[in-house]
Length: 490
Image (cartoon, rainbow, N blue to C red; front, side, top):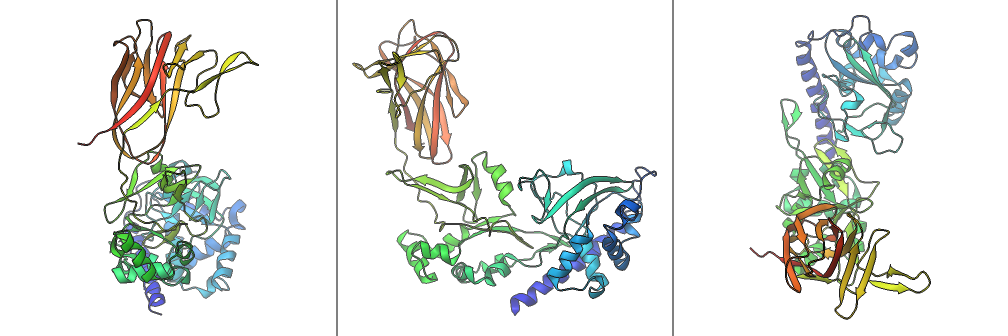
């Protein structure tokens, strides 16, 4: 009952904020009148081609007193739900129609569909809108549905956008936008699937954080992103209660507070925004200062790593319970228990260039073995000098290359070294790591006999595989011995 009472208070704050903000907008009208030959936003909905499709929206504007506002000078963006969208809204809410709604409630609902700035579809990017609505809250743009259109708040498609009017732009949308009237805590606390996680929040006091509604001048001042496991996920990890979770954490030299803080990020981050951000392989910093590392592995994954036996670990978002858009932030449900990763100890990595090539008697060509570390472009020749266990590469033209895959490099800084055999007839080469040039070019003529050169220093941010490629800048051979990564300890 307490949660429902507070939810009602949040909704009341939303509606009150919308009325306050919109009344303040009234005093600022009249800056722009773009084209007097075009209809204004309200009258646009009443022209013959739109009248039948948007009659409920027009009636709602009349009942709430907003019709005069959207038929005045100014610059607005109006998201206009169709009659079919309103009928769906009435059915979902158990309402017979607008007559069952108070005018102030209608006004608050409609102000969630209005921006006090002109925003075309080309101005919209995935994630939360850059502007708050007249209600003081945000809407969310989603372009990932695969139909080439923009969806707002995941459920309402913009089926006809960028309808220019004299006082801004109108976007025709399928469904009514419903402002979130619950907090992250409401969602977790009222859903029995999250009993263990909810208990952990209560014991650590972070239930208050999940329930925080921090308004400043009618707008949210603080938001959070929570990652949560369901009881089913905990049970799959051998955890059936809060006591089990605390015992598991004690075995990992951690505690419940650290664990909970590792599940919270300040600010609201939807999946699409994380996906874009993580292309750069950067971390999401949690409340305890440690990062949740994310990567793109055909999909968004978190804290990806491999055991020495090759077992792959990665945490993913569950599709049904991710991007839960609450009033004070976002909730993502994850498919594994997200313990704080243990820091992995860096070790020197040496990959020798050997045993990569075999001679095919049928084709009478040198070919790469299935498990080879080497590859080359078509039209080049590669020789294996098995006596010295060196890989000889004869580049017949510039841009021919040899590459080596180094698996599961532990995050940290390394000096990158190349071992080779020098020869006055050999080539100059440039190292590329994951497609980006590394250090200066290497002159394989320099040195005497077996030589080693430091190419440069590189920091790896996540545990992952990386491709090392030596591209020949000149014609000539290269006699490769090894690639070495030497940890930087300072």
